[in-house]
Image (cartoon, rainbow, N blue to C red; front, side, top):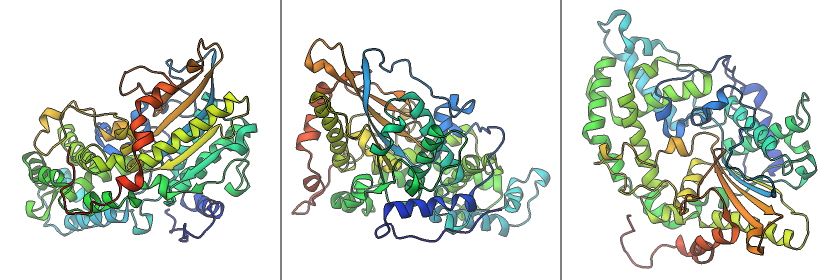
Length: 482
């Protein structure tokens, strides 16, 4: 049985602790039964930003709470002294907009003339399939998403026990976007830490925990909402995603449109690319949220899934990635904030002081992570993704589902190395993406001297000022397309 919507809270006026506690109280009402056995689909690798975290890290299917130590992580004489983690929220419900489109498609199937396919009439099966999504769900975190966060907390706490020690709990910094799914994700992560410190005990409300509570900072975690140049030239510009619209009208999508119309026995003119995409995503939501391989998955084969993945990646590329320079430059403030934390930790260690914030956790969105990774030069293909080079981009680096699935995380680990030969070698950094060591974009090395890393990104750290980057041009001019 599904629960009703939680009472709406105004994040802008409610204290962060009250907001987190209130949202966490909805867990009991909104919990969904988890499947006893993992369910997979052949389409799972192609769901883009709707991809489950365990499909990127399949080892988690066997034991989701066991830490998975990458053998390339530093150990021995180099000790972790600070961890800064940027974390996407866990699995969520569809947005209200997606639910309305699904309702439209479901209505088409229910209104169609009786088919002649008998038991094999997939349209009839889908017309009778329960439509359990409701408008109030609107992108909120589901119980599976809370589980994503609790298990991530358990794994990180086991992987970096000194940083996540109970003594450090009070010094943990937790920042979140104001969106409920992010606040809830931060609260669930703290639940996981409680479980790590107090095995077998039920966690109290977030406001009463030793760690936290979450602090809302949208200027940091939703920087794109505060960048006028991005909002004007990309977000509100109807032509900015012209490659997405052109691909919808192109041969690859039109072939799927005709095929789906025939499969569901509805007039092809009643369908469009958006309805096809929502059917595909409904397969992913049923799988991720309920652990069910629903009949929506039976509409598509793997070739269809690859095309639909590319459509999603096109949108991410042009709206959040390399398509326009402002997409990534708008994230400079977040990048600089990360290095300010690292700088402070280095200074404190150099003065033989304890690091004041050993763990910084920042909860945001796929739209938070993708621009930052693009700013740093990751997953950049030789040729831009366009509406016209689908075949050439089959082996592209920019695959959003492999980069930012639900619960995706980008982690900076600062090490202090005791036996360093020079002061410069004393502090080193590794980055992890989704708990795997991420080689440096510019050298493919798995570790960097901290000073070398700062030097490589000197332009961003010193010259990228958000106020200037996000300021609209004084005169009319075209924006930069890469």
